[in-house]
Structures are given as C-alpha cells and as structure tokens.
Amino acid sequence: MSKIIYSIGDSVVWGAELENKQEERFSHYVANHFGAIDCNNATAGVSNDYIYRHAVRDIMGWLNDGSIWSEETGWVNGEELIVVIGWTAPTRFEWWDGKKYQQERLWSGYDKWGEKDWDRTTEDEFVLHQTELIPSYIRTFNHIIGIRNICDNHNITNIQFNTFYRYKGLYEPTHKIDTWGREQNQISAPHLWSHLSPTFTKESMYKWLEERGGELLPRNHPTKESHYMWSNKIIDLIQEQNEDEF
Image 1 (cartoon, rainbow, N blue to C red):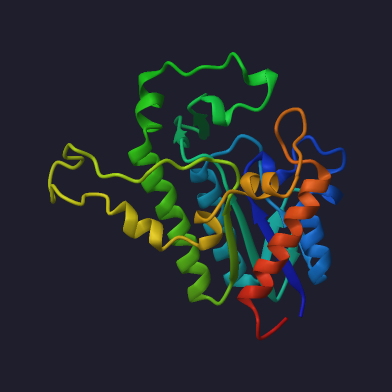
Image 2 (cartoon, helix red, strand yellow):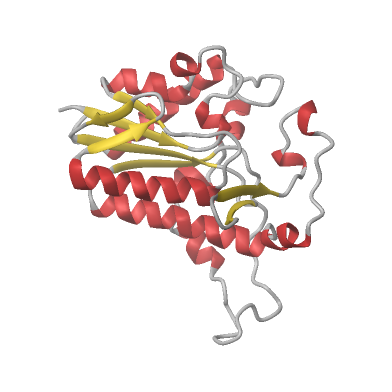
C-alpha cells in the first residue's frame, strides 16, 4: 500500500537553516522508514491559523481523490495518509487584507530566531489584542481538536506536537468575554487541554531534544542530528497508533 507522510508546520518542520532540507529534516527520515512519500507542506513564519487552514484543505482533498500536493513533490497519490503537524506559537495569527492572508505575530523572546530578529517589536494595538493568551490558546486548542477529530473519524494516523512554545498556566478570565452567555467557566480551558494529544501536552519538541542533548543552529532551529533524533520519536509515535499493523 502506497503511503504519504503529510507534514506541516512553521520553519522548524520546514527544516530552516539545514544545508539540504529535503534530506536532512525529520520528515525525510520518517518517510524513508515507512517507504512513503515525503510531502512536507511547512512554511517559515506561518501561524497556527495557517497550519490549520491548509491541513483541513489538504486532508479533505486526499479523502476525496487520494491526492495531495506540496511545493517540492507536486501532486502525489497514496492509498494511506499519515498526518504529522508541528504547531507553532499560539500568539501568531493570520488576517485577511482584502486580497490575501497576512501572517502576524507578537515579537517576544520565545518567538525570535537569532540576531536577525532581536530588534523586532510589536506596537500595533490590533496585534497586541489578538496575541493575548486567552484568544490565542482557545484558537490553537480548537485547531488541534478539530484536526484530531477529522483524522480519527476517517482512521487517519495523526501526530500533533508543540514545536517550541512554553505554555503558561490555564486560567479563566475574570471579566465577561461574550456579550451573551454564561459568566462562569467561560473557556473551560482544562477541558480543552484534556482532549489534546499527550504528544502535544507532555513536552515540546525543543524540550524533548534539550533533555537528550539535541542542539540548535545559530537561528535556533534544530540541527540535522536533532532532526534525525526527532524522526525516531515520530516513528515510535506512528507505530504506537498502529500497533496492529506495524
């Protein structure tokens, strides 16, 4: 049975700073292990909104006709789809400027990638409001649960992980966040968190690599050795989801 490893995320999943992205990033090793096509759709600097929007589009397309696209492979066909998603910082988001989507973020420490970004700041009030933790967390959690439900309903293996973001404590707002509706337990964040994959909630990719001696490149992207290490983790997770088949 022909397989496709469909991966999507930001610059980390894309393989930023690697000399040969197509042969050094983790998705390449995962695809090789399973004898599958490496269909990597990651893009540098994108938001979780972008990742979710494209993943839903691509999964639905594959369900309809068994084909899927990436910039490097073009259209490819496969009888089995394995979805691997590396979610980025929840405080990134996208907005429509009238003609196309724009990717935006709050330029804070955890989301700066080396010297090139050190002086970048965000002062626009619109951006600052959109990157507050309450809307950022809810939006990302809903994305993750949505993808998981789509894949589970169609028996599609799906591995979803947090690339680098350090999630802070979940809390309920002290003010009313909707014009109508209830005033207590408005977010139910613990309930949402409990339905996320343990792969996402236990630790980030970066934390996992750090604990095992994985290294980063000058702009804080994983080295090829770290990508290889992470590929073994992803392979194990895929096999765990398919114990009866592998």
